[in-house]
Image 1 (cartoon, one colour):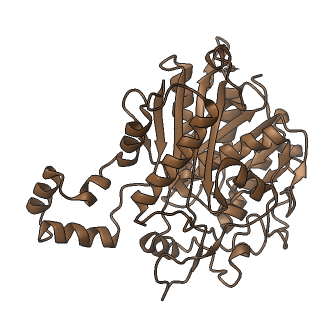
Image 2 (cartoon, one colour):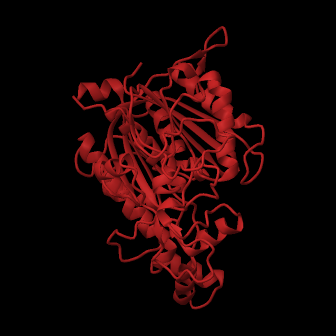
Image 3 (cartoon, rainbow, N blue to C red):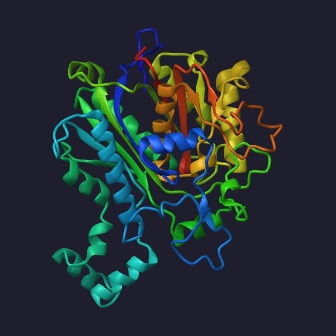
Length: 425
């Protein structure tokens, strides 16, 4: 949050440099492969092939079934994706030595939740589903499922791989988790606790239980016939989000430290803002005030007004209510400019990567700044009269982009917005 001056006004906080990016989504593996596909308006959403779909109302997702991973449970795939994007980001940043990263680790990962196959494996290992035998098995380390569902399991493995300093932090604040992890890392650097931080957001929740739960909430699209057209953010015919998997990693650094070591700076985190909603476990507040406050807090933290924003990377899930609330928030913050500021919804192509979304979409926003290219919102064929926004429909667009506002609004009222810039001021 922005610091207050003696007269109560907001004071700009120090920017933080981004020197490394790694991305893996349903579009493929690698930063450049993902960016090329996103810029081309390609969709990574396809029919699920990982598990049986009989009786499922939704049969499509942005899954990463192309990865050569033997075990397909959420922890295994989340860890594999997180490891790969961290490796790519660190390689680009060129910081530290192999296994010795000179900073902390901040991870956004899905909440601990044992899936049905894992529960059965634990039961077989323990002999019976009673706490005593299960705890004895866990204490001896002979039960792999127990170890893999310990809180912070993914962060612990990443720390062992890359040698980050201090205790790794695991964040799970619903769909805002990736942006929350970035905010925590930015604050640590600003406080002088570290000159660098590794942020990883990863989520592989395309599994039967998650599909059923979101179906019971009527949150998922059921447009199964043509998977690539299922995600329709901001369109009048939108009918829910598409569950997806993905990961992104960012290497963040103190600007002076990055310059001193001759690092190539990709972009900057200029401001971070959050605002709790608390209206409902899944629904946004009807007045949109927490979303408005979140965006305004990010702008205040960056020390700029809404007129300085050239592009909005929307949360844009494709659910009827979320898109409406985000539109109301943009209108309140940007006023007369609301209809002319370009708004892109990456989820139209990659689906909703849940806890990883804030990190994945911040990474795409940084590439937007790098290449001065606005990714499209695809599947936009039926404009919604209630959403009078420029959603960069269906085709990418070249533009002058100096600052991007990236929004992440999660279940339970966890809202985070980031201001990202091509320049530090």
